[in-house]
Image (cartoon, rainbow, N blue to C red; front, side, top):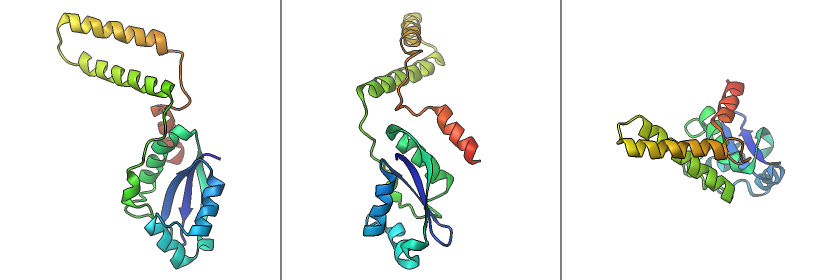
Length: 162
């Protein structure tokens, strides 16, 4: 099972994590007591691992893990009032497929086009940009990858949790 999980200690402090194999992650915590997460480890030692609640809060694709985890860490305020360490905020990106990289490149180009449209540019540059924008709509309108996190998906999660 791939997704985001939540560990809550007896006084209500929350740890949010991600895994591509959640059951294995939980059994790993029970064996090693989370040596890389000092706040979570101290909580396990203080209250006992059996007194913590472990639950899966979101199942998602592997490439969506980082964005959704960051959303839930912010939602539960896990850095200040929870068990997540600040060092964990520097999440390494997952390996991206060629298709996802191409999609990100085109999203970047579209973003640049939107910035350029808001400024005054010479007529030739504006025409070139508009042609490129049209070609993007034609090429990528029907294509989508399972690995891109859409703003709509994060907003949908936000609406469900609020």
